[in-house]
Amino acid sequence: MIEELAVVVKIENHQVWVESGPYGACGGCLQKASCSTNAIGSVLKKKSVPVDSDIQLQTGDQVMVAIDESLLLRASLLLYLMPLIALFIGAGMADWLVPDNSQSVDLWIAGSAIVSFLVSLWLINKAQNLLILNYYARPVVVRKV
Image (cartoon, rainbow, N blue to C red):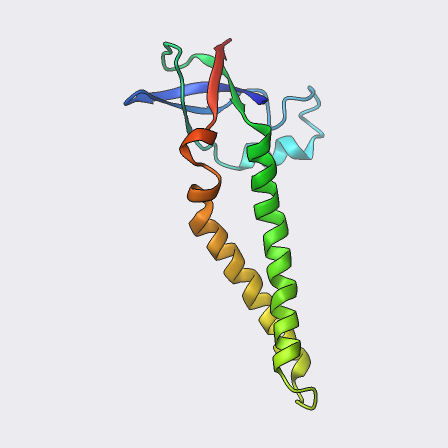
């Protein structure tokens, strides 16, 4: 399990909504002035995430949230490997279908690769709730800090 410190921001219908902890983007050190990760984290808007909890909590409580490592591995494979495979398949199909004597064969191959890449990203975006965030693989509150 991978754990992260978070703060409870809302409780509704037996569901706890949390935001990442108050310790910068990674929480690894105190070098916030020269850390590019902290600079990016401070610019991006914080997003509340629903998590399951069996612990009685109140808004403002600091909690440790955990997520299964296999879920993270599946998400990484889906988000990084699938678009790359789609890019190569799109280019290969265009190379196979477009005749070699065509004047713009390279343009067709590049265009097909880009279109298949973008379609794969769109499909991943539509399917992410079904494949990654199913009911049994949701983050859970491990303990109150």
